[in-house]
Image (cartoon, rainbow, N blue to C red; front, side, top):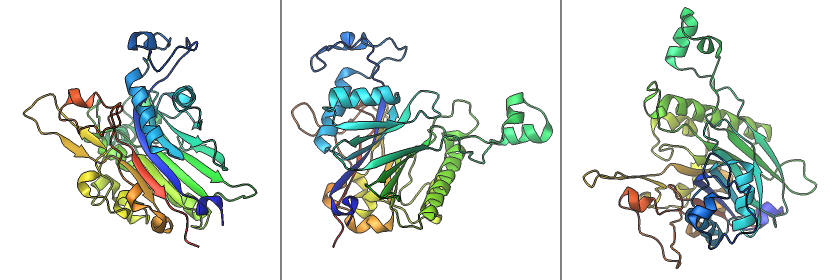
Length: 344
């Protein structure tokens, strides 16, 4: 039996909200006590570092969960990822990251425990065409009007990427597990051409499912493939329309559904307002989808949405307004999947 099959393993998907850690002026300062002003002085980047209190809180969260493999969204490059592990996680994790398509520099990345015996391949799908254009771009091409870029553009690509991690054991040519990590198009529509980003997000989701099926076919369905990330919408059951292809074209299932987590406990993000008169909305935007071959291994008691703890280890109250939300380490909560050893 392989190590992957015989061991308890914990996977965590986590949108860490703008984890920029550029420390070109770091010279051994005490990061456990440094104040915010001195912390920000450690970088020369025009993008400020994530607030030190929030970085410390992220580290407490990761160390408390103790994941084997972290799948992270909104990381400010491989330097930030490496600094986070080396300086805040006792250097227990090895960083894996390929720069994606984000115009904000928020990338996808993995942190994997150095103690694991796996070897890894990291693959990017950022150059994959979505086979998607906005209606006005199609019209520009058909009529010959519009700017030159619209006339040349054949398809958009992923807003960020689909970052693929293949896990191998010694002497094996076939991976024992594959993870696909994604951060789909946000709900922002600055150009006012795609309300809620739904059309672009649907196209990204459909291409994501195509990639999943291509890889699944490549290995004849033998290799378990996890699909995780920030989907920026309700991809769980019942899904919003842009996510229907996930269930029509695959047998993947939300691990929180498999674990029987109550619907009210699945939210990973809160949409809040400064106004006391406006009711906030709790939403599940973050997911780990798993194939049927892993369902029996899911530890239902240890697969859930983690809630942040304070400096004293007490679970923090759910924020009631934006000011309270800003106290959290991230505007997303992490999703945890714990796999038990496969039954003999």
